[in-house]
Length: 436
Ligand code: SF4
Image 1 (cartoon, rainbow, N blue to C red):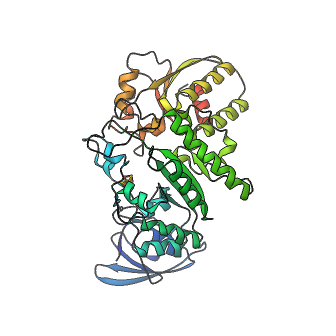
Image 2 (tube, rainbow, N blue to C red):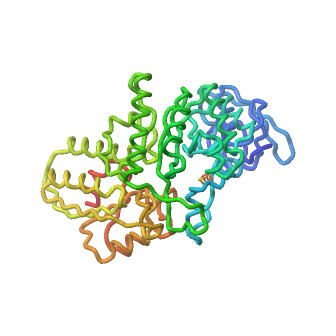
Image 3 (cartoon, rainbow, N blue to C red):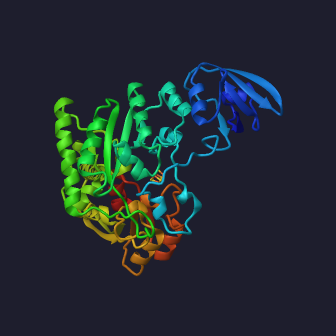
């Protein structure tokens, strides 16, 4: 196995040693290089011997580094150096299966790659890990790993993920735990399937592993494109409240034996469905499950209140608009009201965007499409500036899920538009100064 060097950074250790674009990196210090994890791991040494194949000729380059963790400046064809691993499951709740046809190809890719978990915090199911990969995670002590567990009941996991290996692969959690690998875990809950007593069981089983650092419970997300798929429904108010109660009950017991620490969190969406007040920022500790929508509202509110306290009140004569999904609408109304009280002349309209593209049960800002923004903001008075959540633009940064570009939206609406990150300090700054 080898990987092709695409570029060598000028002045880097690799450049000074003589490595060239087009070289095949075969091994570092006699360790074969298969992908980015091998590369990242084996360059962590002051003395490196690179084995390289250049047009059939085997070359050796010796590198001495001042800092053992310093990069050596090699770039590769793809970030992972080989193909991203796709999942081998057919989960009954899979969001990818619920997307309409005709969207861009990358949105249909079902990622389940342990390297992406390490590099970008993606969640993996463990079902696709071969023995070599499991052992490599242990040997390299790649930690933390983010794991989509869903249930600790092996038979139920097979049923939910439609993969015969998904029950057995739960044993990898034992191996990671015994090897000191920390784990953040996720349970996508489906009403009547893996909640209730099944949820109690999963929580108590996960809690037996001391290296499990957090558990996030997230309600299943359902779009209107479910024809022919497994029959699932969304949570009712009472069912969502019951999930929160089970988690609170579990945490109370866990905290009693663990110095007051809590382990499991219901996502913000559960509180919104249950119409229960969201916990305050202190509840979420290190906010280790923000990517699962756990504590996002509390963090935004906390930052916004701190930002308000740090900012002198003054006159701000402007009218602006915030557009967001149903999930964050009430919170943004509350924050806007606080800002209007502090800054004389500031007027903030908050507009709720209903997700007509995926269906009204999808309430998060991250899944609002450009066409819904366009249709629901068209003809409305938006004032001096429009703010939308940056998360709606997904990974591409300038494009919504339906390929409408940010620029297209701005031109269509004829108002200066800003994509604002989920950061209370930036939000306040943008509201009072953005675009001025
Ligand atoms: S592992 Fe993820 S991507 Fe794969 S089928 Fe399950 S939900 Fe879909």
